[in-house]
Image (cartoon, rainbow, N blue to C red):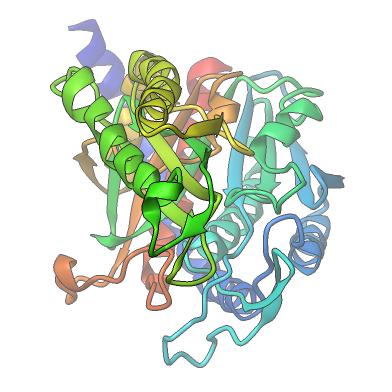
Length: 425
């Protein structure tokens, strides 16, 4: 009864706020699209987002916000202070592109090239970070214009290197946290969105608890003895040993984890060894990734992977060097269940809401969630007339999300900020 009464009493003000947010989103939509197209045409790789950062900073300064740059190398942060007591709400967007050649025939397609691992490569926003950045620029503009209705502060975090820092470097959310991005002022809660190419425009996907997997890259170097391919009995063959290891690693998931509870993936994505058909090489290198959706499964694989690799290698008279994690790793993207439940009405007012299963994709937004309660959601970018099976996948040359998906993300982040502040002022 009391809950129903509270909802009734709050409804008129919430409807008024919704109408205003809707109107303001519509008013800036053309600008948001312009920003998105500029960012899409000018993508930059992780830890190299210098022009992108300058573009964002110029916009934020134009709103009258104090801006910090150079955080985690190319990150940009601005704080909107209402001048009234209340919580500190952080909103985050990632800003980096990928070494992918764009194949879409768009007036604003990317033809940019960059350097990745010492090679000249095409660069594309093949995961929608251009839309994330443009949406948060729009949210900053709306909330700044509503400053007199806020209680507390809003911290706008534009994060570099979500896709992973270049070899030999560090970056992304983990470094931003280390450099104090959640401090001064201390953040109480953080919200983030990711656009989805296979989710209908206007739809918001959410899940309490783990929504995206932990990621742990690894490398296994299989060491044997070189010999002529015509005389394999003189060798300790690292190629056949590597093949046995690849097969054996799959039994960790299929035979050691409780699959009804522990979603997990072990994938080998790279194999290097040998120079020609008739030489058995001294060694073979395997590089792969582990994805897990709970800590128990992650801990188990950390123990099992080197155990399996070493045992199989020994049985083949070879040896292995296992590096786990290889160069970076992300925790589970974990939506605080209590926060998710409290903010669910806001999601439902901002779009069509779907409770979804967890995905084995990963997100370094998880580093923020390790420090403060956080909520990470997906917003649809697929045109309604495109069948889901025909929607292009993320990280591919054909990746595409429609501009029309961005207003839902803008309204969602704006409403989450307003509602959280109102409930916690």
